[in-house]
Image 1 (cartoon, rainbow, N blue to C red):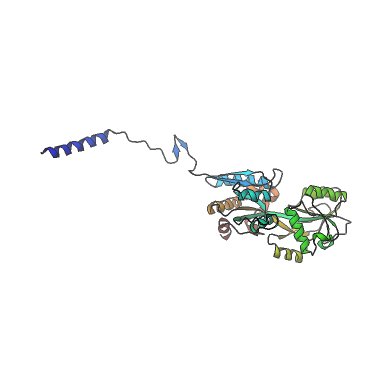
Image 2: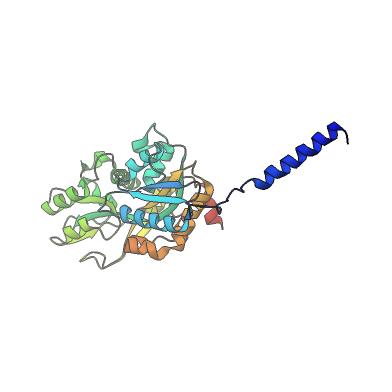
Length: 331
């Protein structure tokens, strides 16, 4: 055996010896470290912008957060108390919220850059679903001689706070009846202020946009015989043709003391909106799990939660749907 071959054989024997003496690495099971189960590699944080803690939006947002945390792997959702619709639009656009609760008319104004969003269009705003109706209630007191919207001409009318969604509703409904602010005495008053002024006789009629029954109207009824002004079908049809976020609704007789007959009117809708950039699968799963856990939504808020159903999930949807929502509703 020559010297060269001997050196090669000795090198091979040395390598085998070294490999045999090495200590094998211990492998941990996938997804565990030191015996503890690990969270998914990437969590998705979902901040839900709602409204005041005493309102309807906030408890519903809490119910949604609970559903999504329990049913969508990797999601960490929380409900945030906010200033509601207009504030929520700005939070979503600024990236400080991922899902917002908002009136569909406010969402419409934002998506198309009108009303309080004039010149400030949010082109990437997308609809997730409609939740429940917020009724336009035109409230007066017996003895004022007001039966129809046309009868508001020449009256003292509380139209909501200046620049509010209620004020826009009032202006649009008056327009459908051929009435402008020049034809009435305008009072820019909040719900509570309008109720007090109706009771004191300082205004003749007030516009209130809220789910019925509304506490402010019940409060008026404790001292006076209240009336709700009817919005007839032909007027409602014209309104909806111009402003697609409105829907027809009936306030059932018995909702308020002394009003036994059903009252026709219109409503805007509380809805969920998101940014166009939100992941399609996340949006789809948020919708699916929310609707699949309807009982949890009713626990969050009995009256509003009962009305959150896929059958009405597109009623009054005046803005473009997110692809994840489109996928859900097309199934």
